[in-house]
Image (tube, rainbow, N blue to C red; front, side, top):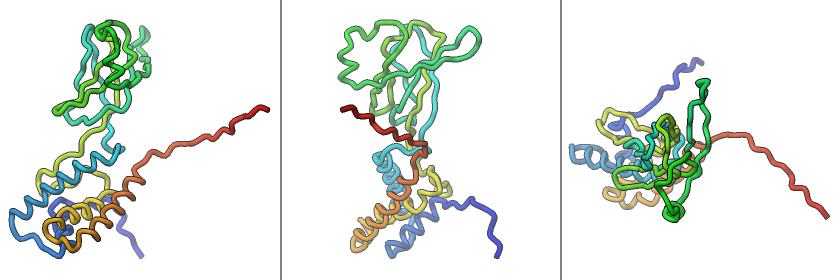
Length: 225
């Protein structure tokens, strides 16, 4: 038997909404129902932001440093900063990266002179309502250096009904079942428990798959008598 030879299956939001309503034993009939489903999808994706770090939303960014400037603003879609390095260009054109240590608010507050200038070695992340700020210590003393960092981006909004989710294909089952569960709270309370269980199962499967696969080395501890 022949196979399709393609691996580009996806679902637009209007089709996801149809599938979710069907699981609730309903069908989409009005514009209000479409709008309600879109609101619930955006709520669903917001809730996914509380489920940990999603690998497909990890972005890399570089910021040029300015002498005497302590605070730098991450891109508007940033939710948190995972790790960062201080980067400087050598005379031969190569670059050298030095790991920066992420510290807590209390540790940053305890620093006696936050404006002290030198080569940065630590950073504190302030997660504001409208943006994410990176506060360096020490404050850079040159303008020809950079910080390079990885940040967690927010999942994009639904937008037009013809759009597709800002998530890998592995999360399509959880998207449909999650929307069905959210809709059932208003439309089909009798199915809510069942749909909740299906959603949690499918989402956990996708989250467990969305991990880094790296080599692990186990070294036995040497004991002495």
